[in-house]
Picture 1: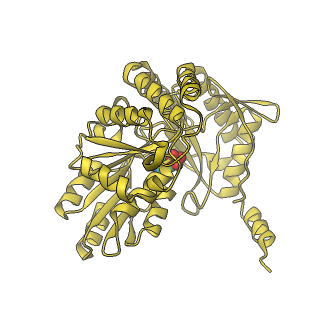
Picture 2: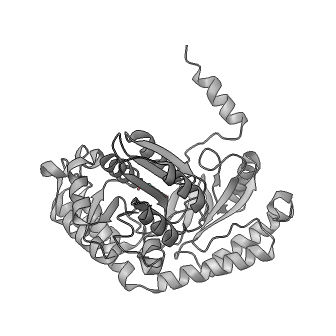
Length: 391
Ligand SMILES: *Cc1c(COP(=O)(O)O)cnc(C)c1O
């Protein structure tokens, strides 16, 4: 017999058991779980748009006018003017010829790598890339190799050895669990020298860096240097879905061959309407970026003064490295009791021995909230020695 319960018990013993617990969320990163009021510091809603009434109104209006479900795949009857409008607006915002909307980022990655890479081809990707990219590498019919995190020499050696027909280098723009930014100009140079393509998954950069244009724009790279740009709409956009942006021939290839585009029901048009409303806000409300960066600076200064094990990150992802999974979980639980929600991120999401508290900041936070979090961390650090960097 399959002994699933023994496996589950072992997972629990290792401090790696995961559970979903419903959380009520309201504007201002305020949550409530099991009757306890919480300040939420682990959402990817970096600009605080998920609760913006303008997004909700756009979504509700579009649902009433166009229906809730799209009813079919894009190539059948699911494709609407709202999808086209969103694709055109995203392409224009990012300075790309075209964009193509996918239902989720996970699907955009699987479908895109699968469409571009065949049995004679090879994928080279950063060891810390998002799970969806690692899976995309597994599922495509080409070979998939991982290079050490942001290690250009290692990547260069792997590319030198490769005899593959097409070579695709893939990196997260902003690494989702560390918050650091990939060395994009150097990666683009290296890829060009090897006649390889570079794909950047900018799930955590789009809407955050360079007034929302993301890590690729911040690095000053165009669609020739980064032929495949992926962004998500469920994080800083506060909506849902994802897109690939690039040249016309790339987008046409995906329409023909990306299985997660062709063989799935089109994103509800109301979600496209919400994302359009979000893009409008991103283009006009500069204070969100300014405030977010002020919060990041405040948190980093405070955490450094407290000697917390902060990782080097200039983005809203500000992890505190704890190491041991059980201890990370216990500290996260203690924070929750103190009224702060900060998820413990454990293997297999991050490498073994690098469990962490992944603090994320949002323009929806106030300075007072960040100071309150620092206060709670100070109290806990006096009890937990592993919360000191020098420990
Ligand atoms: C969240 C995320 C994805 C997946 O996007 P979804 O729209 O949530 O499926 C892909 N890549 C990275 C780096 C992510 O953080």
